[in-house]
Length: 387
Ligand SMILES: C[S@@+](CC[C@H](N)C(=O)[O-])C[C@H]1O[C@@H](n2cnc3c(N)ncnc32)[C@H](O)[C@@H]1O
Ligand SMILES: [Zn+2]
View 1 (spheres, rainbow, N blue to C red):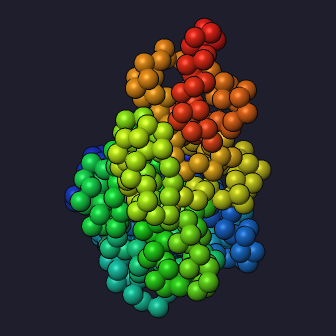
View 2: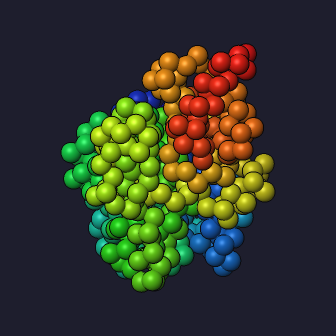
C-alpha cells in the first residue's frame, strides 16, 4: 500500500494500483471522471432542491471518488454509499475514511461489501449511481437505471472504446446494437452509440435518459445521464437516434433517419457507406453548462479537466454531431496544411460556425459541409492566406 494524492484527499491504494485482478485499483488518468462526478453531484443537489441526496459508488475500489465527494462537494449534503465486492477494497475504504477529516453532519457514509447486481436487487433507490466495472457495462445498466430515483443521475466510465469505435465491429453490434466505423470521428461516434444504447435500456423502463455530460479522454468514455420517468418523454428519445451516411472518396457525411434512399454520394457520385444508429443530440446540457461556468473556480479540477470543459463549452455551440479531421482533408485533397486556428478563422469569416473539439486536436466542429470547407481551403491556399 502507499499514499496517493488527488484533488484534496490523501488516500491509500495498492502500490501496483493499475493491476486489475486481486489488487486495489486506482487510475490517476481517470481523475477527470471523478472531477466531473463532484460537479454533477452539486448540480443535481441544486436541481433537486431537497435537503440530502443519496449517492451510490457501486464499484469503488479505493473509494477515492466518494472520498473526494465528501471533501470537495460545496453544495450537496449527501448519504454516500461506497460499495465494492472485494473485501480488501472495503477494508481500505474504511481506513481511508478514518484518515479523512470531513463534515459528518453534511455527509453520512456507509461502506458496503456487496456484489453489484445483488445490491441493486434490494429495494434501495438512489439519486445518483456511478458504475465503473473493469469489463463492459451492459450487465449493470438495466438494474442501475431501475435503482435511480426519478430526476436522478446515472453515470459510468467505460474503457470499451475499441468495440464502440470500430476496432471490433461485431462486439459493438452485439453489445450496443449499432454499426460502428473507423472514420476520423470514430470516438465521438462510439460515445454516441453508447448513449443511444443507454437510452434504449432506459426506455424499456419508461425512463428518458438525457446526457448532462458525455466526453472522451484517453481511452475511456465518461457519461452522466439525467433520468426522467414518463412514457411520452422516453418515447421522444428515439427522435435523436439516426444513421450516418458517408463517402470514403470525398469524405462527405450526412445524418439521416433512414439509409434506404441514400445509395450514391450527392457530392461525387461514389457509393455511400453507412453507420449507426447513434445519438445525435447534445453532449452537454445547457443547465449543467451554466452551472459549471458559474461555479468553475470552486472545484479542485485537474488541468486536463479544465481543458476539456473549455473545449466542451466551445464545441457545444454547434449542433453538428460529428467533427472533421483537417489533416485527412489536406491529404485527400492535396492541400497545403494549415493550423486549426487559421481554418476556424477562415470558416467564421465565410459566415460558418467553427470550433475546436475535445475529441481530437486536429479536428474541428462546424456547420459547413465538406465541399464548402474544401472550396475555402483551396481558395486560401491559392491566395497564400495561411502563414
Ligand atoms: C475500475 S475499478 C473502480 C475504480 C473506482 N471507481 C475509481 O474511481 O477509482 C472496478 C472495481 O469494481 C469492483 N467490482 C467489479 N465487479 C464488481 C461487482 N460485480 N460488484 C461489486 N464490485 C465489483 C472491483 O473489485 C474493482 O475494485
Ligand atoms: Zn463523395
